[in-house]
Length: 158
Image (tube, rainbow, N blue to C red; front, side, top):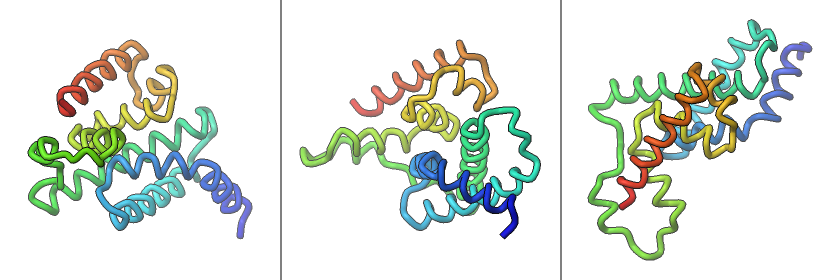
């Protein structure tokens, strides 16, 4: 195994939590999760050959994972007639045994692909600056968009 491969594998081992975190928000089941995870790894490997370490490794990994996920979702939507989204009716028939975390996950699945990108970064406790770097927008725009997304989630969950 070449030095580049070994460094790449070490980097993936260190940051696989980030990749899984993104995958969880963009997939509905284990098979889709694993497919997306593999697709992200492939994109990271291709990009690794050109990665110049001018940005933080985590920033680069988030960026690749999010853009790959969004592209993946668009492919899935084209191949199916519609994305397997949670129906509003399911929120009306929630049982007391479901946790707030499960409700939040279902609500997040109702967000657009770009809104989910903000949420995954927010839930991973990234700073507004880090989010801005990853998403290619200003820090103040991150704040505005996050507030709108939080309001949307509250509306979905009530």
